[in-house]
Length: 132
Image (tube, rainbow, N blue to C red; front, side, top):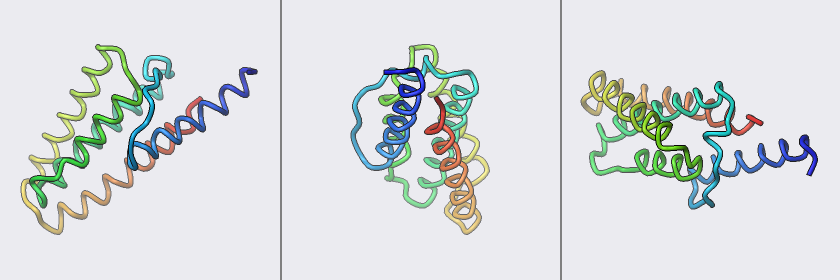
């Protein structure tokens, strides 16, 4: 497969993997360590957003584990090396702690923040799906 063809194929697979993060299971893929630095930074930012989303959701639905499960899927799909996986987990936890501190209870403000955070997550996911 030509380099350009591989790049297009990888973009399609990445888009599918991100959709699967939301929808269901995906095959294990080794990508995180192969991504360029800007994409790795986007993955870290996405982990932060997932942590925020988890905290904001739990403010209204304490038993909901949706966003923690999606973080687990992100790690499964990206299959990062041990050091980068630790950084992703740190970002998730930091995002969770920041949102929990700012929005400790279920209120209109926490719901508005959840919508804003979700939009940022969609933007990051879309950008990552276009990364060669």
